[in-house]
Image (cartoon, rainbow, N blue to C red; front, side, top):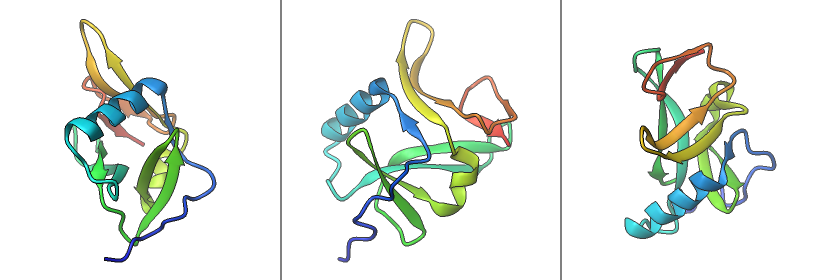
Length: 119
């Protein structure tokens, strides 16, 4: 099987906080995710505000850009960068909220769940 996009692109359009990196490393280890899988960050239509975030491990595709962010291999569909440029992915663990959060400067509005936005 041919590996796509082995060399990371120079500038990553999104940021991962230290909390997000630590949680992603833990998930990779707990779920025994193979090394050839990378973290996919993207968007899809739907959600209460128009778009929903995509975050999960996947194999690179030809339409993806490849990045290295804080030691995590990240892939993103080239068409999604316009919606995600400058976004920060964090992981929070508190009494009221636990999970990944998305701080997206391109979002004109978000919903209460924090995983849906409009741009």
